[in-house]
Length: 226
Image (cartoon, rainbow, N blue to C red):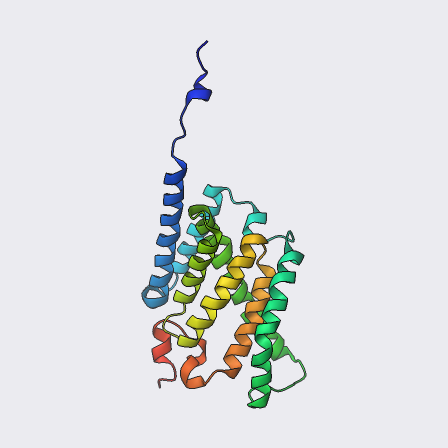
């Protein structure tokens, strides 16, 4: 008896080719992100809308479930239990140094402080969405070794902060930790919280002449120019 067409039909694209195309997609979008940081934000500032639309379209084409993107409550507790204690251990020396050097002080919360944390926290959430929900998801689909995909995601995260030496180092190390946790527990909310607190501490204790108000790209060299 002849086999049915459904049984004999070969896939339109092989698994290896699909991995390659997915990896090339991630590299291409990341190249556009770097172009935006270094050039397009000054020449065509609204092009970020198109880049974000491409990311959203990619989710649609790849049929990414919200759970895989880390945007739901699934794995929230497991992710938090792994990343937050680790981050607290890393942040504790910064807190001690900050108070000892007079760069940190206890103050009553007010609307200005809450607004700052809300705004910066939203920016950190956006960064974790792009880094983990999009880039790391694509890298995990393209690279079989989970540690390697985490490393690549961390390198991308750090490269987006060139040429700021402090942010490059911090985001690469933290990016690898975040990526490793995300690869096991896909949720970005605790990661965004950890980045928000860590970013605040790094900004507070770092020498202003070196961190340049946390600017990256051409803005790092233009810092404090009149």
